[in-house]
Amino acid sequence: MRRAVCFLLTICLLAGAEAPVSAQSTRTYTNKKLGFSFEYPSAYTMREVPDETDTSGRRFTLQFLRKGKIEQVLGFQLNSSSFEESTEAAGLAKSKEGWEDSYGSPADEISGRSWRGLSISSVTRCFGDNGYEGMGDVVKAFASSGSKTLWIDGGECDRLNDEALKWVVSSLRFPL
Image 1: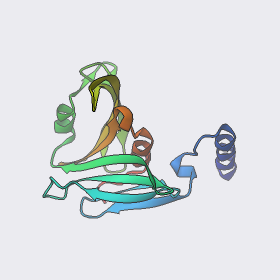
Image 2: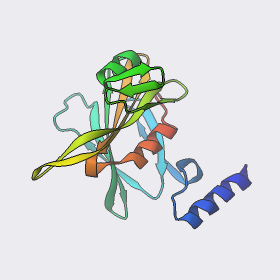
Image 3: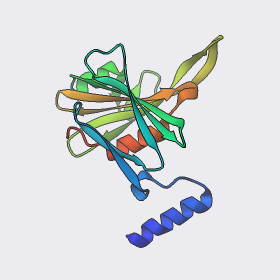
């Protein structure tokens, strides 16, 4: 096993790619109030930014910084909803091919020890300072555990943070 990890790290370094979170030195983010934790690469520091419009404390943003510069940003929100209610809220339906949104974009089934959910990369309209800028990608996921669902917003258009979303989904512990 140790040889396989060393081989994988060598290939990633030679290719100039980042190693998977599980093969990197990691830190753990824990949110006891909302009851979840996950691993992220130790090359990053993290800043938690509360949503000032949310009085319940169930919605906030995490900024991942490297060398003082924000590189990844994820939004989190905890809701009281089941897996089925969450699929409906996300506009996802099960077809013969699996889960997909109304545009036919496939959603991946994800799961942990005590949760299950869906992760999707889809298309959205992008707007900037001068109005409509064209189409772009959007990534999001949710993890449901009984009657609670943790929503994870990976951003859209030029603010896409799919790498950080992968870190969370691959190591999420929910509920604690």
